[in-house]
Amino acid sequence: MTIPAAPGDSGTGVVTTALPARLDRLPWSRWHWMIVIGLGTVWILDGLEVTTVGNIAGRLSEEGSGLDITSAQVTGLAAALYVAGACAGALFFGWLTDRFGRKKLFMVTLAVYLAATAMTALSFSAWWFFLFRFLTGFGIGGEYAAINSAIDELIPSKYRGRVDLIINGSYWLGAIGGALLSIVMLNTDYFPKDLGWRLTFALGVVLGLVILLVRRHVPESPRWQLIHGHREDADELVSSVEREIEDESHEKLPPPAGEITVHERKSIGFGLIAKTVFRSYPKRAVLGLSLFIGQAFLYNAITFGFGAILTKFFDVESGRTGYYFAVIAAGNFVGPLVLGKLFDTIGRRIMIAATYIVPGILLFVTAWLFDRGSLDANSLTACWCVVLFFASAGASSAYLTVSEIFPMETRAMAIAFFYAVGTAVGGISGPLIFADLTESGVARDTALAFCIGAALMCAAGIVAAFLAVDAEQRSLEDIARPLSQTEKAGGRGDDAGR
Image (tube, rainbow, N blue to C red; front, side, top):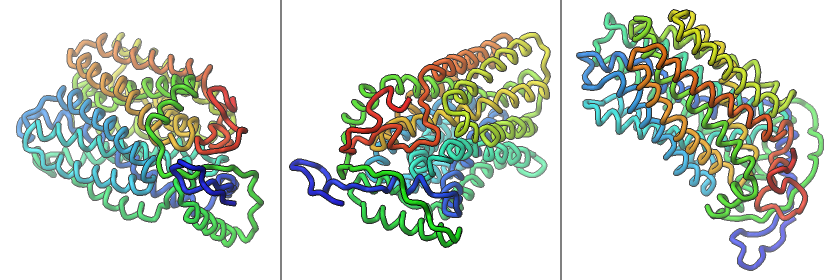
């Protein structure tokens, strides 16, 4: 049913639809696997990118690498610039994603990433390397907003938690690939010092081009289409998916449970988005910031600095750090894979709090053992593997949380904002502090960096225990009522749906 727009309305009308309920009641199908593959693969790229830089830090600082750069600059300044670029890209592309659609932007952001990575491979001086590390991060940051928005709007509510966590956790498949790839590429028996690290970046470009081809088949979000005046396209897309699933299962789908009435709008003002997030949902805003700051410090610090710890404290050759990275990356991927389903069954609040507090406590223990000199390269890696098994699920839940607890019209910008602010606080300071403390070569300084990360994770877990939203197996529109929805029922503020 369509009703003419009110005077002054920026949209084309008012529509009553069951489209969100139709999406949520879909059983898992080949179509959903296409979404997972098309969107999840970018995290593999990010993991490949970040881990590669962590592993080549030692090689880039060696004489004959082709760059006049120190290990501390790679793990500190270059890492901070990459994260700063990701923050800027998230904000810039996040706004465009909410305005022009999910699909257009996750194609554009991947293209930006590919171009910047290719130019990184051609670095001839430190400033060039720094510049294109920033621009590579700029593209990846935009991916975070566009991809997480699309994931949660396309995946049925019954599976949303585990799928979101596993897709974000696929980052670590890329990390494993980057770690193992660096072993080959940094082997001077195969490639000279000034070539191997360049080919590593170039292979990332090749992988990205393959992903670009796969992603062409991922559709626009019907929820975004509905709000922005493309209801016929949205209905046609969902109808085609329903027919495909019925043909696949040989069963009729059950009727959708409920309708919503929304104003169609061409765009949503940034002022309205900010007002909604911070005035209507202040507790959720505190929750989002806490989760992002905690995980950003921990992950950016250890990812960019772990190779330097291995070489400085345990005399591991730079060409062999990839083996250790592969082990902790495997623990990171298995975490969301094993724990993801529990976010949909036991619930968000318990699982988010647990996956922040437990790794925080374990990291304090690791810091104590490291300070005492009780660890070697193998046992430190084992400790980090256990810590990150839990922390990886927690870090992925940060993206899930901010994606689902704010109204649909604000989704991409909410992800972008909390990612940018949280990462700016934790992700830029983390590598800089970590690089400074590990550069001293004093075990106690490095243990202090561990403790800072542990404290931030525990603090975020405590915040989640009190403020997390019980969003498991619930429609996005029930968790946070769309700004365009005309009905009075539904989520209306900070405590809605708790």
